[in-house]
Amino acid sequence: MASHNHNIKIHDHCMVAPPSATKASLPLTFFDLFWLRIHPAEFIIFYSLHATQSHPSYFFDKVVPKLKTSLSHTLQHFLPLAGKIVWPSDSKYPIIQYTPGDAVSLIIAHSDADFEDMLSDSPHETTMSRSLVPHLESSDSHASAISLQITFFPNKGFSIGISTHHAVLDGKSSTLFINAWASLCKTNDESPSLVPELEPFFDRKVIKDPTDLGINYGHDWTKILSKIFTHENSNGRCLKIPPFQPRLEDTVRATFVLTREDLEKIKKRVLSKWDVIDGTESTKPTTLSSFVLACAHVLVCIAKATEGVQRDKQKFAFLFAVDCRARLEPPIPENFCGNCVWTRLLDTEPLDFIKEEGLVIVAKGIHEKIKMLDKGVFQDSENMLSRYVALTKEGVQMMGVVGSNRLGAYGIDFGWGKPAKVEIASVDRRFTIGLVESRDGKGGVEVGLVLNNHVMDLFAALFHAGLRDH
Image (cartoon, rainbow, N blue to C red; front, side, top):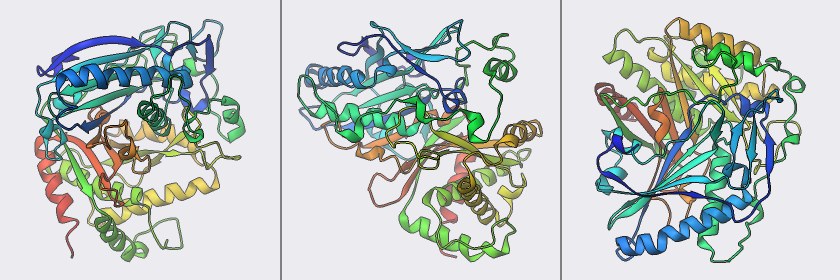
């Protein structure tokens, strides 16, 4: 891990366990199994500290012990996160199992990197963020649920890097856990309790069997996994997460902000040409979500920038996940801790992303894919996997999105103020955009990207040009 950046030095590597607990296990649901062999979700929260707090002696004597103690108390409420994914020989599916003695890996590090550079939205080396994210352990026989890294920037602040196993937590569940940890860090009770909305709901009975949900992937996940990861493990029961190496060579990381006014401009442009573009929906909506508008603008700029620099890349498609908690019958509690997201594939014509009216085509396509969920979460899911495989074989560049502008990440306060920046680190592992709500709290969206140097330059020009008044 330290090899990514010579500025990082490990101060301590400890294992944090819940204060007391008995053995417990939790089944993985259909939603969880879908993500079993996907790379971890990785994000970093940066906090600025004032002079006294950011002095090394204060930080290591006061701040770190408080973060450790509150983490232990939080794990008491989130017991499965201290455990591991295992696949018992007599079980058809893997499970999450906590055994007394299990604990979460926590690295305490310090960095000599420029803290202001880390907070900057301007393009900077991709490796800078990578060094702030902990490795998530996995092997043939087990996989950790979560790992953490606290990195101190002397006289400036600190970051918390979080790696979570996607088969254990989706974005909403990860945010619930971090919010619970922050809440307990702010209280000084010996045995603190959580407010009801931060108490996790782990009961898997609320998730129905996939065949009841109108979809049948078949229940033999060993066969599905061995087909996808043929070179990994012949029996499909391997739990090791494949490498998904970060794209660190010739790439830069940057953040772009879409203000509420920017989103309004995009919306007007899309709706003004809505009826000119063919689509399945007859009625034009009165409004469009920030998610649709942000994704459409950014994806079209990425596609055009990529095609402009790498002429052989002209075909694009878009995969995105949707939170299904409120969309299932009956709805699932908001504090359900696990996965409750399902993927949609925007498979417009692959060249649509770089057409003159690409923005309208893509925005309309995403909107209509989301509207289809009203007819059922798994509408048309049977064909999605085969379409995905067919498109990738054709050389279509898949683009994805992680995070959400609705998770409230900038409200996570451990007692030293709100985040100075929130970054989704794992966008460097795939061709993916990261979404977070705007840090100024005014309804905008922050977009995190890792792109080739030259592609990023062209993307920036297209991004800003597309927001000017025409």
